[in-house]
Image (cartoon, rainbow, N blue to C red):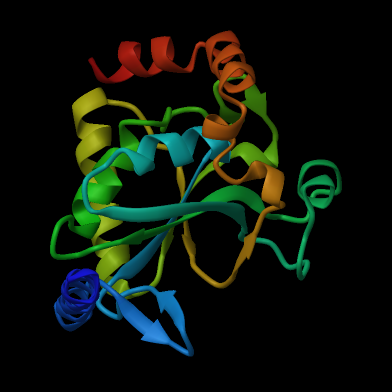
Amino acid sequence: MKKIILFVLIYQISFFYYAETMAGELNVTAGKLTDNSSFKKAYFAGGCFWCMEESFDKVDGVIKSISGYSGGKLKNPTYQDVIYKDTGHVEAIEITYDPKKISYEMLLNVFWKNIDPFDKYGQFCDKGKSYRSVVFFKNSKQKNIIQKSVAEIEQRFNAKVVTMLWKFDKFYIAEEYHQDYYQNNFLRYLAYKKACQREEILDKIWN
């Protein structure tokens, strides 16, 4: 009897795993789970990448977000390089998303609602080149979408959007302690975000 129950459980688990794999929810390569081939990636810089991670992680259709650096010439930059050596990089995030659930236009809208597009010196309490806001485009279609969005914001606010548009080149993953910082160091993160008045400024701009 125990053998029969065990067999049934193994069969159910195997069937579920097979069904998920065939549905594209799970992909197996060399014994490891990997991203679905239909997932896409987008890149944004909105000041502190901890805050940008939090903003995108709660969006339906976003699979994951990773903190890192993009836009500069130095290969494999460190946090110290980017912040103190003017490498040209900005703190950025890589968004992996499911285009069946969320479009690039919708991701761009999330980005705008979580930055100050009129601050050319950085974002909120973080000032300096590495904290500038940037939208990275991978092709002409994305560039056109971004430019149209910028024009709409400028018309709405009657102000110049200073967020930059850069052609995406490479993304370098930041140090491990930066990943999911808002979750792993919740109290410190909360104190930082409160001190920067990020939510208050965003509410003033967009609401």
